[in-house]
Length: 186
Image 1 (spheres, rainbow, N blue to C red):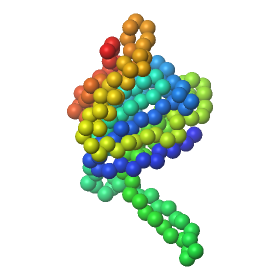
Image 2: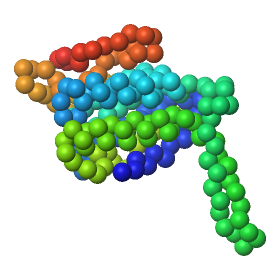
Image 3: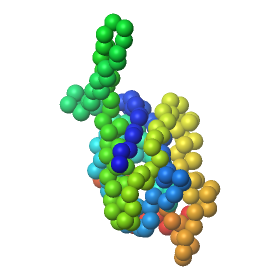
């Protein structure tokens, strides 16, 4: 099962990253799935970006991130593609931020765990994760509010009056703060 993540990130750039379940199906089935996904985010994604906001919904997720500048060449990844032309083949090198691979690993490993949990197989997520570059600060603020209003706007509810989502005003893992319980109510 391959997750194809075709994204380019610029050091210091702010991005809205999002994806949803295949055929708009659920990607989180219980409380532990949310925690497991967030632990994977902490391990795979946090080394390469600061998360400014996020929202995990039953069938999709949103992240607002600022990509960390990677000074060390050892972290940069090079893609080499060879193209045929009339005059022979041409090799093209492109530099890729490791956040691209980290997101692919996150989604692939999470999908494998959910498939094992549910006794299913195949893709859990849509094939292309979106990463929209937000070049304007006003647009970044609008996306910040959009992410946090998402659960309210779609009226996601569950038993006991608690929203069936995980989201916070700010993700504080990058500051060393850890949360074990989901946000309750809105």
